[in-house]
Image (cartoon, rainbow, N blue to C red; front, side, top):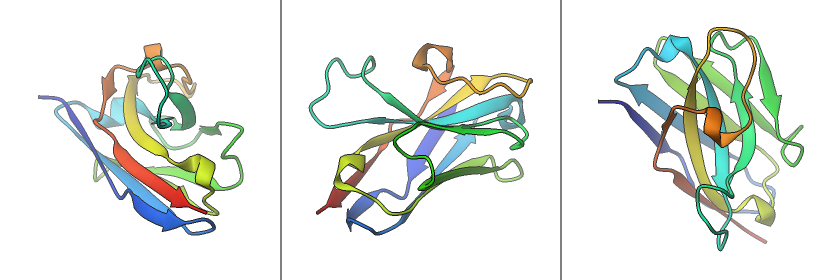
Length: 131
């Protein structure tokens, strides 16, 4: 059974940091590029309005970020632990969202940024940033 389980969300103040983790199981994690998306509160329909945050190639050699998080967020992965991380620094109230990790079967170094390209999704973890 394929699973992606996110953790590390919480309530923080503006300027604080958080690190999200996502553990994959039930599939060959090393063959998948990984991505983080987020869903801001009140956005409907749910799946359509997820914003791309960051992506990393299967090897970890390539990364890509959404414009709103460049320079503040860092995506990394540890294939030995089947885990992808999202280090979030200088958090802002507009970063408040449910954060989802996703897996995209891809053995080249390209990083997908659209939801339809991803094969598996986690259930999300809530991040709330107060001003």
